[in-house]
Amino acid sequence: MIPLSALDLSFVTSGTPPRQALANSIDLAKHLDGLGFTRYWLAEHHSLPSVASSAPEILIGQIAAVTSNIRVGSGGVMLTNHAPLMVAERFKMLEGLFPGRIDLGLGRAPGTDQVTAYALRRRLETRQGDDFLERLQELVAWESRDFPEGHPFRNVYAMPSDSPLPPIWLLGSSGYSADLAAMIGTGYAFAHHFSDYDGVGAMLSYRDKFQPSGWRDKPYAIAAVAAIVADTDAEADGLATSWDLNWLRRRRGETLPYPSPEEAAAFVYSDSERARVLQHRDRLFFGSPDSVVRQLRAFAQETKADELMITTPVFDHQARRRSYELLAREWGIMSAAQP
Image (tube, rainbow, N blue to C red; front, side, top):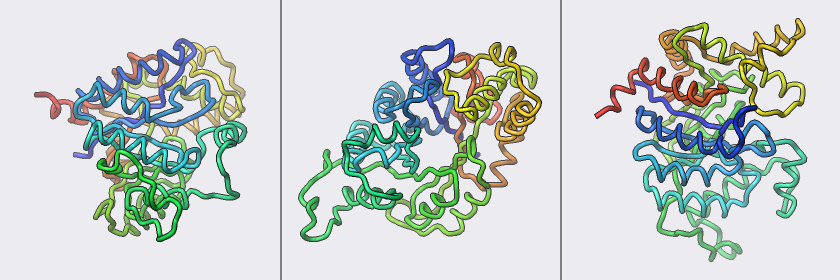
């Protein structure tokens, strides 16, 4: 059975203040821990009124403290926003507190707009161009201690020194991260839920090019997908209208809290906007439990995914809880997780 996991952005809705969105994330993680989900990853986004998750490492600690079995990690830490030493220290501390239950997912993008990205980094030394690979090499070096003789960091230690860095996953929405993850031998997670890139190509390329490493001896690929499950196809379709309007607003450059189905129903779409929204629905798996499971199993087979990571973009928190529960029961992990 292919494992199921969850990706949570801590959605801030037009009816949910940001602090409640964080509380909802903790509640949902506890719920999924009992349903048999394998991982619970938190995203890093900044200056988005619809996303409360700006510091995933803080939520990771809170969630790991109130769950028992589920792995908790970042989906991901945007490495370009942080000094590699700080990332190493924070995640070694988390691993020390919750051994064997922490994942370190890394992304290349800033997770925000250019102005906010500048505000995040303006007090740090910056370099021109994409320095993700250099930052990744430095992050790994804090664990491997292979700074060369005479390097200024050679006598600096990422504490706690007796706690290992958690497993590293590279996140991506294109072929670059897939090839890099394969080259250095880490796990890979593809962001199908928002990428226009060919996810099948990226997933298969990662598997074909994988080189064993100290991180893992064989490839392991996760596909992150958006899915909404309800008791009927019609109910799921209604919940998905929030996804439609939120996407269109983002395309217009409007960053607003996540809308309700009622807001979506009242919105006046132009013909061209309606066509674009319907086309974007192709990225969403939605419907009754048996319908969504058939779609997801076909997608997993096509991509050869080792695991599916589900994000459920709905307005109502209870409907989100229900969606994951229906999926877990139909997939078969829920019964397996029960005593």
